[in-house]
Length: 465
Image (cartoon, rainbow, N blue to C red; front, side, top):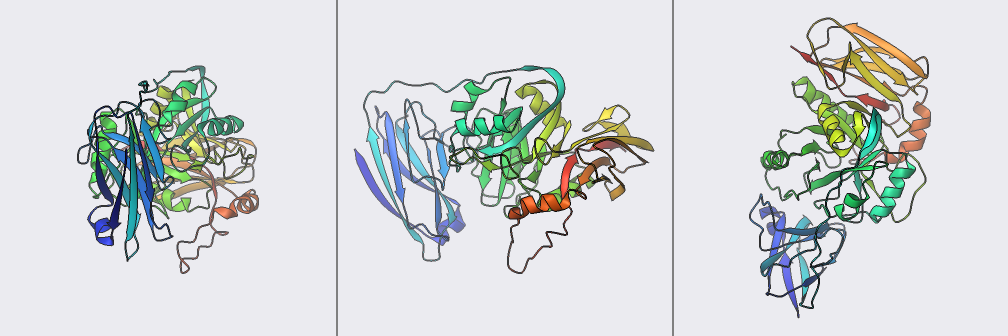
């Protein structure tokens, strides 16, 4: 049984709500739903695709989500035993389902969208959802991971198996797979998580005016934000589930344009440094200087292609988040992320940067007053170490060896953190990553070559004033 429906989408629809709902009825006994969408695709006409079952409510909904593919697919199926990547298989509830169209770009003349539905009632065995596993690698130490990657469960071309292989090739210890607005990548990553490579549950809440990563939550989190204050609703939902919320790539071309919620983390470094990451870092610095305590993380935002790439500056693990853990497990990774027990570096083999005040590590707190801080630095000979507090740069020194211990004395305001800035390595890194340059507009020309290139960023140590 199939049906076809034509819908005229206009700019007025987009202005009223970035999500457009098209209902259709599913009778008792249905075991599979197929939907196909067609519309006049163009640079100024992009329509996203998803589906909701009868349990959905107005925002925020706790259930009823059955899949999202954004602009990556024009068709999907949902069945009792299987589903298209990005869509959730399981019981097909009878009643009013809805195709959800994301009105990302609508031309002035509007666009006609054609939806075709096919319903099937052939017998199908009900298949359950995968259960989370709890692998552990014993031993305290520094562990390396990428906290922002994608598979073909959203808009990448590569399968989870390929991303898994790429992360192992890069030598990572943990990996967060944060596909856009969906959690179905867990079908692969829950059973495949192991002591060799621990997978961290993730989902990227993706909207036209800001992205945020959700970590450590098995449930779907409603992404249908339409107002600036919905950012606070998002944070509440994530924290109700015991998860962490991170503001993603707060820089061009998709900055965070919602109100700032109670975020646990900020992605201060996404893909190669020259991709406007100094803007995200400046916004992070401003938030710290206002007294907020938000831990810094980084992630490649790597969209796995349909083949395994060689190592390089635009692959998984570039940049890498390095965390000090009592053991490698998802729970300990999440705790260290929240606490800020680590740093971000350019790659899995990038410079090591750990700072301490006495025995207090990154993420910790010390009383106000005169202090002596030390930085452990490896792999950055000839580059520059910079110390930063709420007032800006308070000290800098050249790194004179591949294994250095550098100190700084003073009375920092609110926090103290450190950066490694490329000097001896600048020309090499610039040549390798120049392709990351993105011009916002013809009038906005940046002196990329003169822009300081960070090689590593520490989390702050906070000053209790």
